[in-house]
Image (tube, rainbow, N blue to C red; front, side, top):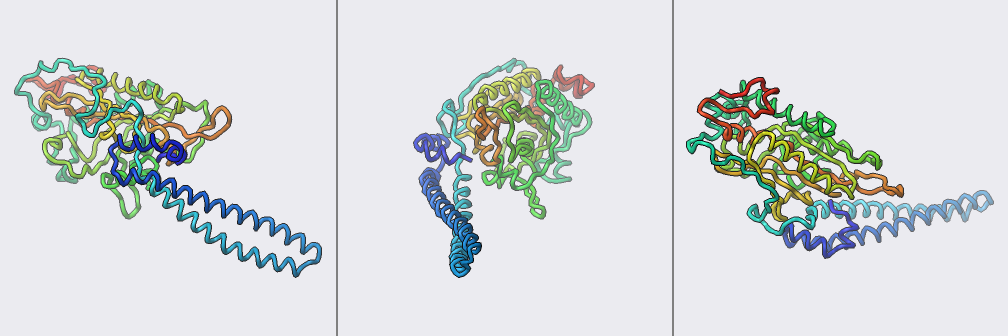
Length: 426
């Protein structure tokens, strides 16, 4: 959620940033409406404060009058206090309504993009930050897509997933299940070796947690909602892990707070269709290792690049051709200020598949969750939050199968063999 002080004090920058995010004209108009509503809130609060001050002074005066035996005058003032209490109840009710209306407007505005974010409205406008092609031409032109390899080597079954649950819920089997477990262990070991504290969080969160990290109301249609208990299945470990610090004040010495966690992730992916959803390209449940950092505002972009480097090392160690995209304003997520997407190349499908997003949210999430720190002067300030996929497994599995297939089976990347116990899927 944008800070009201920024909206008030930097109106032009806010409007330009929102335009870069390709918001609607109605959202642009909200900027001035928010300022007007905040003026209304301030006016109401001023009236309420003055009223409460008057009531407090009258209460002291009433006490003095009773002490001096002036009961008649004291009772007159008590009647005045009673009238003021009724007025204060009205003002307090108005204050609550105004605050709710203000927050409802604020939560509909996305985060402002960083100055380095490219201008654009679609994926084609994203900037290639780095690319490593690897041996893209060293695979047989008759290479099989991963869903055919899965059937050939009994690695996973989409049909069994349909039987048990529905489309988009794969069932991993045998060596396929062990490959999945090996990737999770490898990614977690690399994260903990890099100083991230491992967290095993719940796989469902309450509405407050989903709202704090920006999933609600923006992604409500993409989340699975357990209506009876009003809980949401997590779309990423970012949600519960970041919320561990909701309503928290951390000390300067705590920075950076580095956490990692493995969870299954659940996404409805409403509206997905065509080649994008074949096999493991787009599923409703997938495993992912997430890295989350809480950082001092002065150091968050340095930390962002360190996180990008961490993910880079993972994809390079797996030997997968990859590219890193700096997302344009119109292709960024609702809450991000700057995002780098990692895509790995699928040689059999001859297309790039996203496997990670690494983002700095600046104060957008921390403002919602009241995640603060005490600065050098003892003043409470909002921390910056960052997160990234390190990595998302479904498409990593797909590209390992396709890129490392041979006539005799699928070669396992060297870094995984101590976890799998085998060097080939066949």
